[in-house]
Every structure is written in structure tokens, then in C-alpha cells.
Image (cartoon, rainbow, N blue to C red; front, side, top):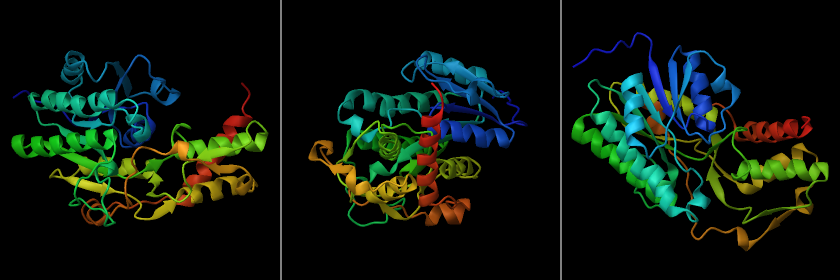
Amino acid sequence: MASTNFSQKTALITGITGQDGTYLTQLLLEKGYEIHGIVRKTSNINRLLEHTPHVHLHYSDLADSTALRRIFNRVRPSEFYHLAGQSHVGFSFEIPQSTYQEIAISTLGILEICRDLDYPIRIYHASSSEIFGACQNPPQNEESPFRPTSPYGCAKTFATHLCNTYRRSYQMHISNGILFNHESPRRGPNYVAGKIASYAVQIKQGLATELTLATLETERDWGHAQDYVKAMWLMLQQEKPDNYVIASGKPHRLLDWVEIMFGRLELDWRKYVKVSESEFRPQEPGKLIGDTTKAQTVLGWKPEISFESLALEIVDSYSKKALQPL
């Protein structure tokens, strides 16, 4: 077996241009890593990734196993973080086939590449609370049954089972991070927190008159992406790989986002927020709340940023962007 010098750790990241990818890159840079990211030609590359020493970008597609294999063999990463794939649950009902291909089939191809490497590599796979779907008994932990309610959840369930199978069958260091909903200012208005913030700012400016949501009472377990990427890194520092639920452990309603964000802008949300059945998805998951006992005990991880601080940070970011000249 060829030797590999890991005196300076090298990380390879798919999805490096996304919310989690950029926060993870910042964290790993602080820890002295050499970082390589896989990006598509159509990706929007921010300045953090383009102009930072020790960050190197490689163009490929998740479906191009030949290019991916070449990147792995050239970079020889000690740690691999698989974050990429279609990540919008609602969109997965519209594009189920490409969602499955990007999440499930790409994970299979990457695991095969990693299995063929001539040295041991540590792998983080981004699973999701959507694998629990219709679970009726919150909170959910690592032993809760998988009952996905969307094409996205089905694809993540397949990929999560696949990682478990490869870990057991080939003694590979693969950890599933079962992350519950996490947001930040780096997510766009296609996601609900960004949508609420964006419309609140537009209404404040007189550029919009109302915000339409499917409901105000849906509850989710939301946290800050900056907290959650720390858990990803901690998983790969463990001697043994495993599955970990990462969550805030606290449910919040969509109404909580609305009240905090509209309140920040001194707007009475009741005048502007409408509920419409046209926003409903074909099927909604049950009450998803994470039990992070294992992550706290084994990893020593716990969230630090509160829901209110997260909501304020997002709406403040949208306000700042709105004030910037075109």
C-alpha cells in the first residue's frame, strides 16, 4: 500500500459552494487544512473560495465517475465531506429523478471510488432528518425508523443505508450526519427562512405587498449551519465511524420566523402574511425534533447559536444586501 503523508490534513469537499460547504471550509482553514473542492462549471464561486490560499477547486459533475476518480487520486485527501446534491425538499417532488440521481446514485459511485483507494480515508456523508419523515414519536434519535415522505427523503434514506452497508461490509470509516433543518444568511430565498426574510425586506421597502405561506403552524427543529459543520468535523476525528443526529432539540413554528423577522423591521406581520393551500406539498413529514444525546456524549458537541439570533442574523443580512448599490 502506498504511503500518504497526512502531517497536514487534506480535505476534499463536494458541495463546497453551498451553505454548509463554505462554513466547513472556513472551519477547516482555521484548523490548518489544505482544502480541495469539487464544483460544477455552473456554480457560483464566492470570493472565499476563489481568493483564499490553501483552497483549490476542481471542476467535475457528480455523475462523472472518471473525473471524480482522477480528482481523488490526485488530491489523496485524508478526509472527504460529501455535501453535494439537490437539497430542496419541495423541488424534489418536481424533479424526483434528478434528485435521486444526484443524491443516491452519486453517493454509490463515490463510495466505490473510495473503496478502491490504496489508503484509508475518512468519509462524512450528509444525511438528513427527512429520512425520518412520518415518525410519530418525537424526538428522533439514531435508532428511529426511516419513514421518508418526499423523493428527497427517499434518496437520502437510500444513501444513508448505503453508507451503513459499506461501513460494515468493507470496514470503511464512514459517518452519517443526520442533520435536522439548519439555516444561515448564506441560503437563498428558495428556502423558507430566506423567503420570509426576503419578503419582509421587500415589504419594508415598498417593493412587495404580501408574503404567502402554506401554513404558519408547521413546526421544525432549526439550527445554525455554522454550528452544524463543527459536528461534521468532529465525526471524522473519532476513532470509530458512526451515525449522529445533529439538531437544536427545540421545535419552532414558521410563525416564530415571521414574528422575529417582521418585528425586526417594525412591521405588523398580520397585515402582510397570507396562508394559501397552493403552497402545500403533496405530503408533509411529521414532527421532526432531534435527540442529540449521542452527539453530546460522544462528540462533545452542542449548538451554541439560538434560534432568535439565527433569525435576526438572516433578516439583517437581507436588509444589508438591499441597501447595497447595484
